[in-house]
Image 1 (tube, helix red, strand yellow):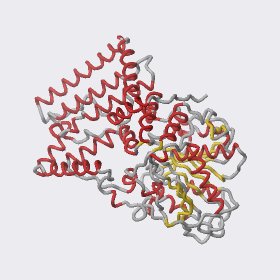
Image 2: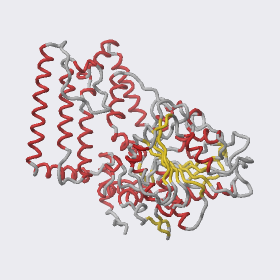
Image 3: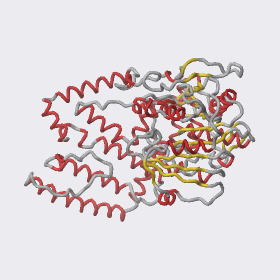
Length: 578
């Protein structure tokens, strides 16, 4: 049975909401429990501590010899005893190998290595608690890196000499400009060059349906004939829909329309306090099913190719299971981009999801009726603090240089809110209790599970996705009873999906998993599946075309007779809500 949470005391709600504003939404109790679990088990492991001490002393001796030789002869070159972690490029510049900066970098890396040893292989500690402790330590270490400070960063010192200090003046200007924009709730500098309907989200189309949760956009055809089966795209509502319709050259919508498909897109309303009681069932009924009704009224007869991205894919899976369970064979296929239907291995985002954290977030959201977009964005940034926060501090504020925003970065800054009831249910029933994967999730009086899905599936995972790890996405081959084509692409959660033809340095693997065939573990599947160079979009489009009828007459735009008149041009109104 799904656990129910008793109503919180009003005083506790106010207290937790106030604490949340100070902690960025992180539960102090969750952090304290994690550190206590780790500290007690480490304290009760003297043998482990002695191993760590011996390794640390050996490292310090090697470091002392290296630094003493470098201090005597500043021109001396030798291999540093401690190397950065793979992917850490903070100390790549040759200046970091010279005195005294080598001492700063090597001492920092030694501390980082010690923390890694202190938080690995501690028997008895909950894996979740250990991950939290590692994460907390990593935040402090990333913040205290010598690369983040003017006196200890040789690259910044050299830049300051070259410019006569102008880099610091420009950096201060950037800092206060960003601070002012943050206080006024404005997007980052450069986002004004990527406005929906003008520079991005410009594929021609019409809004043909609107309710209190969605607008439905129908895109104008650009070919003389189109496949009879329309495509309905269900994007995530954590961000705006137009990641799939960015600039013309990388718009998935434009690509599909150009290949002879009739494309419909859901644009979600940015919820506020008035939508606090919207649930996942609301999103299924007034989102996916309402859009599906509209699509099949405008294009009557054929089934629909349904496409879901991230949490939109999870929601679409719930709706597809409901349709299958109730005998409604309305989908020609189901495509899932970086979408999970099982959350036991949901990756680093699980750092922020446990019973204590979810209870704390519920009390925070109860006060306002929603979770702010900034809080969601902040959580994702902390997962990659070194790359997303501190590298920007050095580049923008110390070096005095601005990285120009691109369309994907501007979209990423266009955050949305999450309604209280829906997000509480999503975290508790899907993430923690895993009700859908385990056959307990209820939509009205119908209990749904992955085996209820009856449409063939095309699932896409991304190699470097830390939001929906591909091993987790791959579980769709284990949990469903239909034919699944699984594709693994290069890139991360967003860049892996936005992989238009012609994009350099892209590759993918693709393979079929027949219904009720033996399960192949993910790494074994990857090792035996050949790699293809280039974009994966054509492979997916070919898969869709193979499950579609011959191209024929163009559909009408909207349908006055069916009750879906044209309400206005794309991108609609909801995309502009902040």
